[in-house]
Image (cartoon, rainbow, N blue to C red):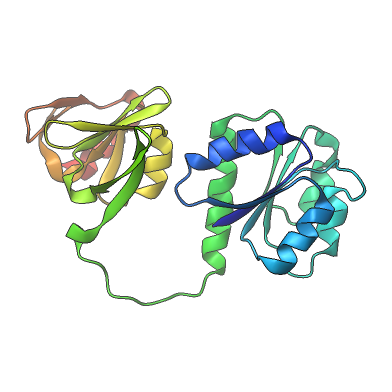
Length: 232
């Protein structure tokens, strides 16, 4: 989804931009610091999602929304909660009250993605062979391609994630939740707040411990024990 950030505060652009780097299905199409600039931008470049501040010079965010004939999805980002009701009457996806944390941001963009997907026409296409499926991640200032069928599990490490393959890992500045939304749910299963597991590498399960084919043991978190039945 192509995103436009419309906000008169440079710090807001910086924070949203940093959050967007950790969401694989979003990309920044542009930055506007006035709603009037956004009108010009959209006349030349359509986008799928707008992060929109409300109180801006000359034209407010809500006034800007009312001028749009073909409106993209919109997430309001405002320091003032009193505009929430009016915003939802204009069918915005969500209303983020500044300052907001990444987990709240992620909830909002996941909602936007779900709404975006419903609007897309169904397209029938042959499935790609499993061995060709890859993800691209940032690691040590490089973009690294990793085959999904080689990933054994992913381990959360603060604001980083270790992607474990056979005997080595790739460290990337992302959250485990962002991978959970990106990777196929029939293969990659969250078993712990710190672990996302590729079910194809499970050897056997003993109590609340999963033994992998490479001999590694992973714990199953208390809130994730319901997944054991799907793994057995």
